[in-house]
Image (tube, rainbow, N blue to C red):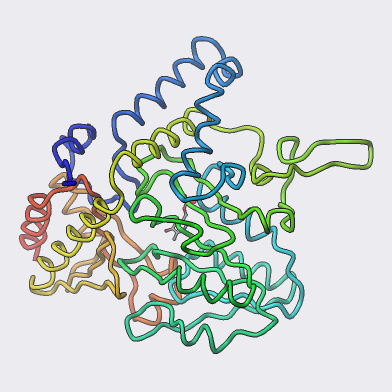
Length: 391
Ligand SMILES: Cc1ncc(COP(=O)(O)O)c(C=O)c1O
């Protein structure tokens, strides 16, 4: 099967207006996602919010099936929440840590996750240990194996860090976690929708993701996967009348499925939009779109690298659609502003989002240009021409 670029762009109204290399920020939504989200808002305005939710019951329930199909889980292992951070938090803060437990993570861990480790370490006395990188800049599997003991309570890593093309070897880590019976949490915020994700192939117990990035869903949507076999051991840090049922004056019962990590009120239009975004993603062959994303990013790195003063910063054996670079004598903010004058979107990744990795590499801020399958070879050429004109 070949990739139908014409269809991808026809389905994406934003393609006509902008050269969008900020897909790791928030992708351009395809028309069906836009239509479904707006239609539900209109229904709410016309017949009432509760009534609209009741009439869209099947579409709302379908979102769980869509996520389950996307990542190879069961529908009752899925919670739909407002973003990836909340998804990750609900899993992490549910783990019953005690003093002396060890949390293992990777160098390019995301700030929000690391802040949570620090908070829990302060409260409970767990230790946080960062597995060093291998020579390619990804988590070292040898170092991970060597440090394991019975005190390791959790391995928690980010699949694709926020600050570059690196893809951590999540399935290899999963194999090690399984062999030692250690809980394993994967932040797949930047990888879901970009590359094939199968929770059984990864071997994780929990996985968090967002809707707005490579899935091309609406902002303010995300989901959490929690494996059935660990679900009952995890008591959510926050409960409400959706996550639990009030039984008597002195008791409540937490629901049995992963919706124990949700709360009652939600953005139904966004949730429906997320379901449609996943259905839309599933219409494409993810192996083909993943290959295309990698090829486009490779092309971008290859064309940027020879430009005088430009340094491409991506690391890893497999490199994904996120391309980071710096430019001599220009700040990333200046580059971003100048590109924006040409109707080109990029974002900036800063030190405090992935502090350990950026510090270790002596970096402060970088330009982040992230491509999706609907971007074109011509856009890459135009992008590089504009960057060259700024030097
Ligand atoms: C690795 C990683 N994890 C989590 C998040 C947070 O996602 P959200 O904003 O949907 O909560 C991001 C956002 O950039 C991210 O890059």
